Image: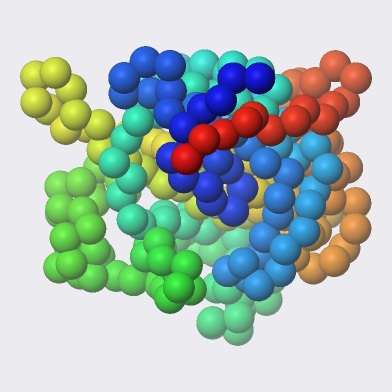
Length: 255
């Protein structure tokens, strides 16, 4: 087995040095966390499914002109991506009230919001990823005003497209999280591109007829049927791995 230099390990993925300069190998784990890492567990086959779902959605977004870090899928659990400077902001787009916004404003879960609401959270596990304003983002230098405008524009485009895509397979896109990064081109131009992943790990997806939850809320709330929900999303997208999400050992690493 090839030994690779590990760059970073997060809650759901491991990043390794890529085969060419400016690339990274992103490995999807089965580990699951919730409530800022207070709850931990394993969702069997999740890494395989999230790899395939992210590949599919990033390719679709690329077709409509949304720039992403995705290059190609390497195997069942790994994909090759462009190396980017991650902007330390999580962008959450909400279409239907659920989760923290329901608690903060006493809005019944499932209430259709008047319009899509975009929120920013500072990526810092030690602080619990606090909700921040545009003023915080620009004042503390996490992103410029121009970069934030581009992030907002891209986020709304992604929301419009994915809402329609999921509706076409009988799913409501309740809310979801995006992350963005900077990439510098040879001419010196710095571009904002979509990074990380889009999967049932960071999207709330409900069945349009029954409102059944088809995402990580099933893990958060001990509802059971977590693996089956992820598999159903992949099946509806038409990308369920043949024979189901088989296991694959993680790569040997060197620090």
